[in-house]
Length: 523
Image (cartoon, rainbow, N blue to C red):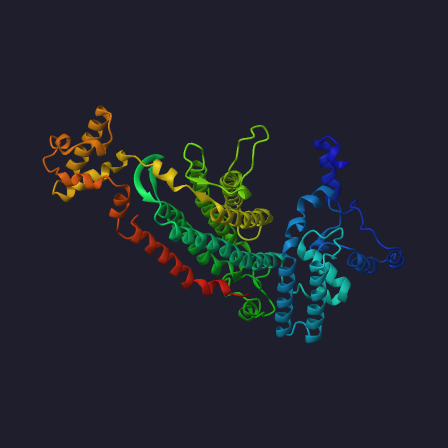
């Protein structure tokens, strides 16, 4: 109702005066039992009863210093349980670890620790069974779990948060959640690389046009093109491997910002929760969201690579090219044109890359203006992070499915080749005869112009036609008019020769094998 009234400066001023005046500020609602205890004469019993009443009321984790109800719109604006509930198990496990750490300091007893762990186990099972009942006031997963824990084991639940803040708690939960998802995403990425290796090895003899500026350039192998994208995906795999240790760093034990006052052993806590190391500075620990930005950056870079790969295949699958044919499983039709077969999977991969780039850019803009240390702005990280992980999971699996099932048309690829693509080979022929490359480049260009003027291909030019351009031309020039020989001539490491392409496959397979142990990490 308040939100619907027009804004009035005078009314706002009066509201502020009332809120700040101790004479007219509203009293908190007290139960009848407490009201009977309040003395109308002495102030001290009144203050004591007020504390009792406020302690007995249902309130937020942070509600002790507040006396007015929160605006319902603010309640909705502030809540995050609708999306951070997916971290329920991580929040439970982190709390169990923290309870054990508190017990080691002596601030809680072993019996209290056991009660907390047992109660948390019950709460965790409720989430797994989808029987957890969310109630009003459960603004986030931490509040919900602690509230339910209190219902299960009673007042001892209030000791769980000793020395802990939601600032270090949420940072711990998200890192625990993310580290396992990164392993899963990396597995999907490596499966895509494996499919590329399998196809490249199996179809190594197929040649096709290579393009620069989307113009026919030189002869390459289909496998060479495949491995050009697999090489980018390998870098993506290296990046996610490099990112993982920074994600798996423990912030818990940092408190709100200044550290833990009860002597919690953070190294032992890290080992208990499967972390590689601890955040070295408590202020940085609660304000660090680099691991979110880095994950979004990794995803955006990987999606750029998938988008470019998709764009190539969209072009290659068009009727004008016909190099590849996508499986029906990853295509759709037109609601109007019966003949259409649209590469929707590839187009969606291309489109989703733009969205993830937007998520990264948006969150970096959120972070850039925040002061040290924790700020509520950081809550904007989680929806973007969850969306990034979910989208990457889908995209990597869809890309693998597309690549595994598409069919190639070697004849169409060969038809896409043209003799003018061997102009560089003609220049290189003269280089082998001792002519400087800068001269051979111009000579070959003149030969291309001559063929165009004559209305023939380069291969149709005779030695007699070529001799006036350079007397180094001999009859063996005819041997260069072969697409296969052109590809084979690029026999350096990373080149398009058959040997080189198979070597690239072998190197990729060795990389996957050498790093396989990293995939078995448990937390």
